[in-house]
Image 1 (spheres, rainbow, N blue to C red):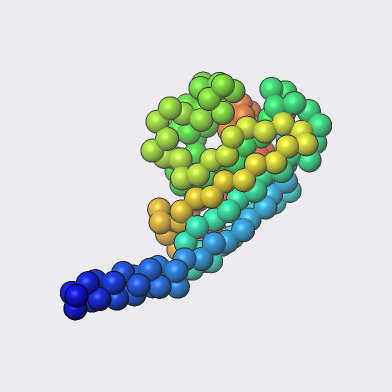
Image 2 (cartoon, protein in one colour):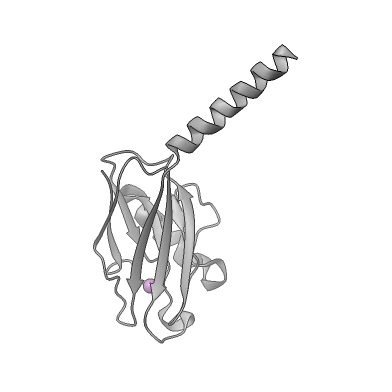
Length: 150
Ligand code: CO
């Protein structure tokens, strides 16, 4: 009986500590029919343990014409993910089959749509060099910005 109480106490302590350290942070970004994001920079605190990212498409064009997603990679990995994602096609959300270099990504949306993803920050480092972009073919050149972990 004493052992059970000790085990229960450990579980309660563990669950309390994980609750204390969990911090969910919200980010929202708009995309348009002009092939733009409304922000060139997104920043989070390194205290965030997970991020809720909402992408809105405030335009009207359908996703096969002016589709947008929000993809996060290390800046050094962006070009590889852009190339492989572009080749993968709309049916695959313009994302590569091998997503080992994709930190986070939404699906492709069209005008009037929104999508939200939640991703862990466990793979992100304070001060790291990260870029977010849209992987729809040709969009990345304009539709990109810095993702900063402060
Ligand atoms: Co786009």
